Image 1 (cartoon, rainbow, N blue to C red):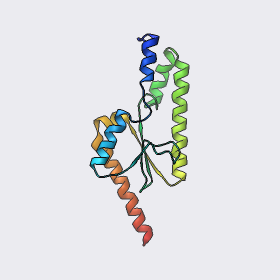
Image 2 (image 1 turned 90 degrees about the vertical axis):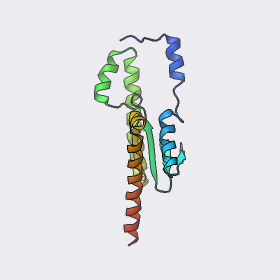
Image 3 (image 1 turned 45 degrees about the vertical axis):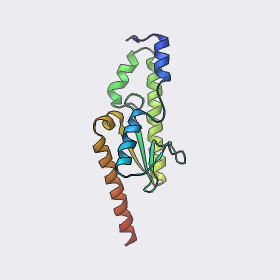
Image 4 (image 1 turned 135 degrees about the horizontal axis):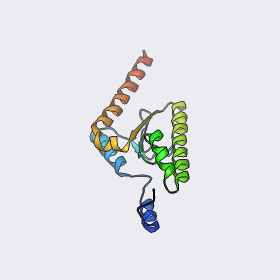
Length: 149
């Protein structure tokens, strides 16, 4: 499958992809702030530099785009392999997925709770994402109270 964009158009397109302050991050951060949940953004003191870190409860939140983090990887991978530069994209996304898994393990080992949301879930179901975060905070608070007993 040939690229429908010229090389220059594709280059401009790829250059415009941001690594922080993305639309999905902004949506989730605004909703968290409105809910009274305070956080750090792009927290560099822990592995993976989470998009959002709720340091009080040791919660690391990642806002993952479907393409670059390989949502539905088993269906996506064969389609990518057929396309132009398919080997590059399969390797890149495969490495991203491996990195995500490694970061999850490192953070869990350090006592952090990792939450990953897909971009479409944030855009279409922001309230549900906030509920997941609030429930995680609640569970952590309950765990703290039980250990105090």
